[in-house]
Image (tube, rainbow, N blue to C red; front, top):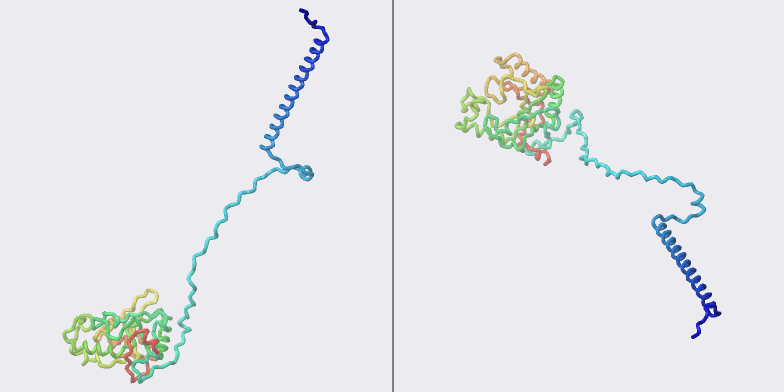
Length: 322
C-alpha cells in the first residue's frame, strides 16, 4: 500500500488551510474580547452617569463661573398674631353732678299719685349716703313700712335743688349728707298710726321710746295721721365725714322719742352740739326750716305742694310712670 508523502501538493494545501483557520480563530477571539471590553466600559459609564447626572453643557453654562452652593436660610414658622382680648364697649362718661340740671316739671297737686315733680336724691346730689330706716326693720315699728318698695329717697325737684346747695357747702367743709327719710307715702303714715294704736306691740321700745308709754305717742306729737313728709319737701338727714366715712356724733339717734332729740338739748357734749349746729346752719342757709323737736328734720320754705299728701310708692317705677 502506497503512502502519500507529507510533502505532496495536497498536504501542502491542507497545511496552509489550517494555518489560515487558526489565524481566523485568533482574530475572531480578539475581536470578541474587544467587543466585550467595550461593552463593559459602556455599562460602567452609564452606571456612573446615573449616579451623578449632569445637565447638558451649553455655552452659557460653560462660560459662567461655578458659584458655591449655599443653603437657603431656615425661615421661622410664621407665628399667629396674638389677639387682644375683646374689650367691653366704652360707656359714655358719667355726667358730673355739678352739671346736672333739674327740670321744672311739676306734679299735679290734685293727683296724689303723680310723681312727675319728684327726683331721686342719688341722681342729683354727689356723695349722698342712704340709711333708709323705713325700708328696713331698724325703726320704731320694727318692720319695713308700707309704701317703701325700693331703697331710694325721693323728694320734690324744688327741695332737691335746695339740698344740692346745702350739700355743696357741706362738701367744702369735708362733710357729706346721710338720708334717713325723704318723701313718705300717706300709706306709710297710716301704717304708723295703726302701729301706735296697738299698745301690745312694744318690741322696739327700749331703743326708740324708753321713757314713754306707747299710749302717749299721739298726744306728744310723735305720731300723727298726717305728715309733712308726704308733701314731698321734707327730709330727715345727718352728716358723715368724707374722709373716714363715719357719721358725725349728734348726741342722740334718729327717731328717738325724747327731749334728747331737740336741737338745742343741753345734755350733749360741745362737739355733739357743734355737729348739730353745722347741719342746721347749712340747711337754713339753703332755704329749709328746722323742727324744734328733731335735730334731723327740715322742710323746704315755700314748698311746692303745701296741701297735697302724695301716696305713690317709693320706687323708681313711680318716677317713670309720668
